[in-house]
Amino acid sequence: MSFVNEHHAIIKTINFKILFWMVSGLLYLIVQNVESAENSFKLTQHNVEISGFAFVPKKLEVKPGDTITWVNKDIVPHNIVESIDQSVISPDLATGETYTFVVKKPMVYHCGLHPSMKGKLSLTLVP
Amino acid sequence: MPLLIIKPLANLRNNLIFTISTFALLIGCANANEIQQAEIITDANIAAIVVGANNIDISAGKIALEHSENTLVKNFAERMITDHNAVLDSAIALVTKLGVTPVNNSLVATLAAQSTNHEANLQSLSGNAFDKSYIGHEVAYHQAVIGVIENQLIPAAQNNELKALLVSVLPAFRAHLAHCQMIQQQI
Image (cartoon, rainbow over all chains, first blue to last red):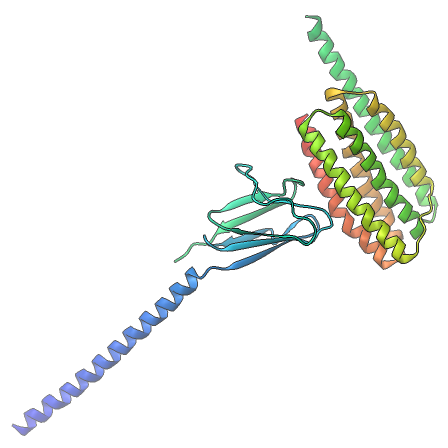
């Protein structure tokens, strides 16, 4: 009889250890996923320099809600115009001026004053 | 019916004027290039060429603002006045800092003479003929000036800051060239 009780006690201990490790593992996985999801949705501030009559970088991968700040480092004014519907995004930016914009959708843009200057915002796929 | 005949003839005349004036500009610049190759280009000459080249385009832009009725052309002319004034200010600030006094040479004289002829021609035109002549000349002029800066002025510049200024203005001239070529397709 004592052998049986002892056997049950051993099994209980093993089960408890297995359960403990399973719960710990599960909690670890949950925390990791939450952190990963938080990072995926974390909004980013991007800077685009306007210099040498070009947008630098010319192409950016962004998420909806990210912000873009253009800074004009040229000696002449530039502005930002959406290329598909021609909507004006920024006013004319003099040397040293900046303009910040919240991204809602992918966008191809150009300088309305110098149409050969082009830029592109592509949306990153969020997991 | 006579209008149908007159319009193509007028277009032909305008195209001929544009072609001849563009050809003359390019030949003129080619001759200027040949002359320049025999001359030593000093930093003082470069200063004079930069100032002269910008002033010529500002002056043509002012005529276009007065004469053109085309929004694309007027916007472009306004851009030329603003941008070339900014380049001019930057160039004058640099040569003043460097203590360089601009000295004219044969290229400056050639550019000035061509500009006088071109402006006289512009003053005699109106409507689409004016727009075609102004924009056509802007295309040829920017192509020629880019060539002169790249092939003659940058290699000749002795002062590093002056050389850097010349390098930094090239993207502006290239953007202007692309802009007027776009307009040329639409007028």
